[in-house]
Length: 284
Image (cartoon, rainbow, N blue to C red; front, side, top):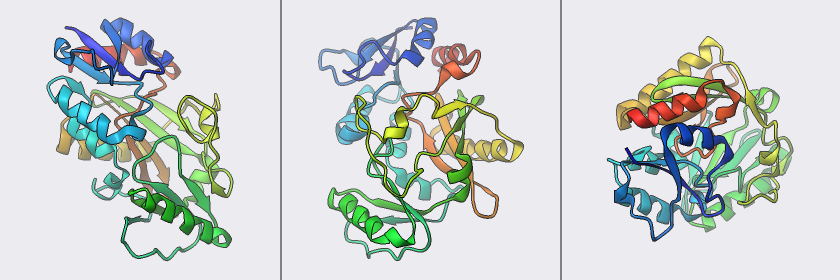
């Protein structure tokens, strides 16, 4: 079986965290938008370190369709679904109180502390946290997002996220592989400032200890299983998925993000995770 791990032109040798899994699976790193690549020469193409995809979303989704469902993992239909955060309102699982404000929709009425983010983005770009005294800034961000043709997502800020961060459960071939703890990203009021990495992202995203090994209690674990069941019922079992969970004001788990295009699975945080990914690729 000939396998490609799709990467971006800034990382032609792939992302460091993926290299052991690639070696074990016998995969080669291939730049996703390289026009010289014959994708039909590969039996499997695994979407990995495509850090630039959200800035070129239509081109990327077109590439996914060309590679096709027989080769691409995750499959194009799931990637297209996951690339637009409006999936939060469509998956049928519990989420934080959320409004989706597209171009032409009425201006939302804000209540309490809110988070504003675009439906298509990555790395907490164009994302901010706004208490009531700064609602004017929140609405200004909503308008900037809508002016770009995207939909603004306005969510109630969850105190659990601000205090405890999020629990991220990584599934490989439908089975829980490892658990991560993600520290809070929106720590200050206002739009998150960007850092100086290869691709624009909130500055805190470049902290070495932002995401570390973690644990999931039975409540979060059961809820993550519920999310995965909803995804699998619609798209079959993903090769990989990360389910980010927090608790709402009533102490119930809610889905913060479903990551099925995630360029970093933090394989190095868990013994055997690279082997599990390689085996899942070979069996997919």
